[in-house]
Length: 425
Image 1 (spheres, rainbow, N blue to C red):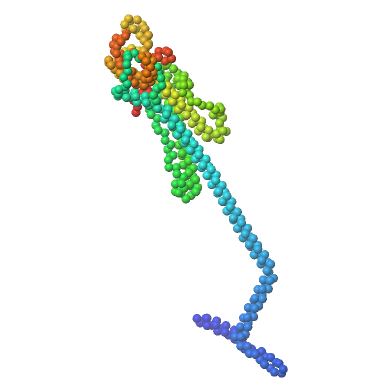
Image 2: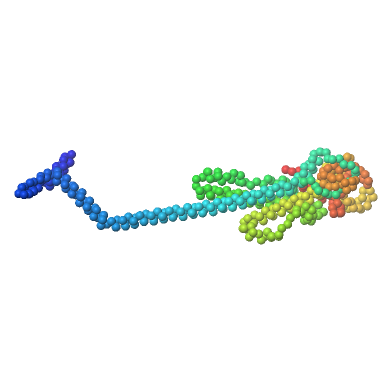
């Protein structure tokens, strides 16, 4: 406080020294007049003069350097405008790049999903084909199991019945075997794991990072594609094995080669088809890439196997593979034997199956009665009962199998049938 007073005293002392009272004298016509200028008036005039001179100096500088100032402002504006335009160009470029990436990503996703959908349709058709291919033997098994369970068949008349093998009822899957079939098992249902719940909208709502979303969708699509490929690989493996097993069953009958039987079945039931021949090995250019063509080739192989499997199963369904009796004792085999009545060597054209009087004799295959009138016979339908007539030493069934006009060994057919009608599971 003392120091502030000190400076105030010094300032007042400075003003009193600089602005002492002054008088201006004016002489006019011999008279002298004066004007008194107190210190306050001098101070006001001095302030006005300072402001006026400062304004004149500023105006003078502004006039002199006006062009330089304007030019500097223009340069600064141009620089700011250039920076702004450059920034806008960068933003536009980034936007265009991002938009291009989004378009490419969207097209890629659409193409991938279209491919997956097309594969799914093809696989669904394949599964439908597989299910229809396995219907005949399923029906035969059920009827065979019904006769084993003692259910009644349709009664028939007569002691001697000749049948022509005809269209069999429909049925299913077959065996597990390499050289000889083991036991037939059902094909497991084929399921594409991970194909459910592929909700892109849900995925988008669960992540805020676009890159993470794209990566997640890519992963899910890849998983689905791998699952589809795994499915077709599994189906191909199973159908390859199934075709070998069915061929093995036909080979066991010693009556006909599997390929020859296939030609007969395909020639009879072949679908009406046509169109130009295009080798599947040359379709890469048409299909637009080797990846999809590889899947198409594999799908074609599996489809061909399923068609072959259906033809083989139909052929097997037409064969008399089931035993005509549920319970019997084998008394005489097919082939050379000593005649039971005269003791001489003779050829026995069938199998003798001893059973109790009145035991039901079942049709070993679907067919048509060619003796004692025409009547359709279903598989496992009762066509007679065991008795003893003609050159017979007791109640038994003399069972013969003829194929292509040649008598065949019935035991081979019955042995092959064991692998078709074996108890499941």
